[in-house]
Image 1: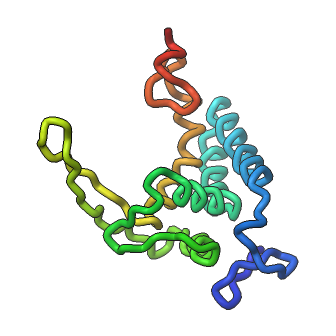
Image 2: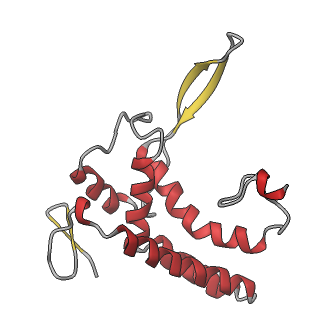
Length: 168
């Protein structure tokens, strides 16, 4: 069990968690293991089991680590949402992990920005807050195995690790 002392996350050995020394290969492996178990349960028709595994994944420390990493390493990482918050430092990223909880979570409204198109018109763009991006990534980890398992085998567009070129 992880304890939250002085707003820092400590491992069970009471060592302070350092963002720069996280073994990301191990983190991805642990999340992938749970995703495989979810996909297997759905394939076998054991939906209660899949649901409990999804709960386990969304509350997993490793999944939360990976969700924050996904939110801070994407292309829009320097673009704040309506709250103006950006996670730049390791301390901010560690604190964000502790904030990824379903209890008392309310998504914030999107920040609306207009981008100029080639023809001169403006295209609206909605920017979520960093915590909303991380929460979306966390739940994506739980829902993606179900979508891949139950999805059409001949569908290639808008799917992870597949492209329209693969269909050709």
